[in-house]
Length: 199
Image 1: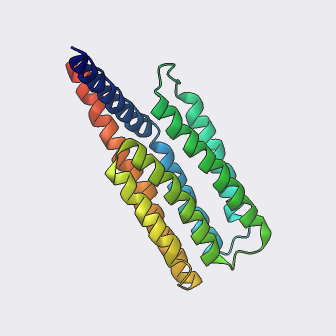
Image 2: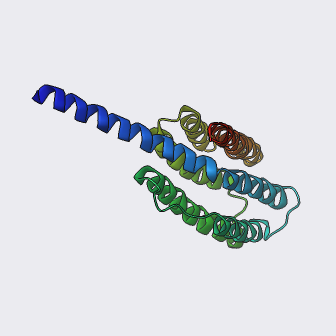
């Protein structure tokens, strides 16, 4: 009898863990627009700073992206039943956002825009960290694959030229921010359509 109870408890715990991971993925899907928004913001800032030589491209773009993000999040209703995994994911991304915002804002005003490789190494390491943690927590291979791309780019940036590191960062942002964000939005929309069909 005790063995059956422990097996039942184990199954309940596994079911709870699986539901928390699914809720974390749904939360990521609901806010995947922010991946795309920040991906586009990074691309605009890179182009503005690198090829158009706009001195304040980074700080101006980061402030505009922050305002758009705050506006976007204010339109979403927070759910009181959000899971622990969802809150953990949200906390990691908020911390990353604050960290990168401060670094990129300071970078734009520091006059050190010529140190591109160091900037790319730091930014991609940050993005790899949070994508890796999210991917492991949610057991989401696509997001963990993005983390690997970020980490490889962080290491590569230390060995390539400034121009090459700009192209590398743009490719990474397109792949791991914009395309991943679109992919997560499509998955969430398919899930919502399925729920609406069954309702």
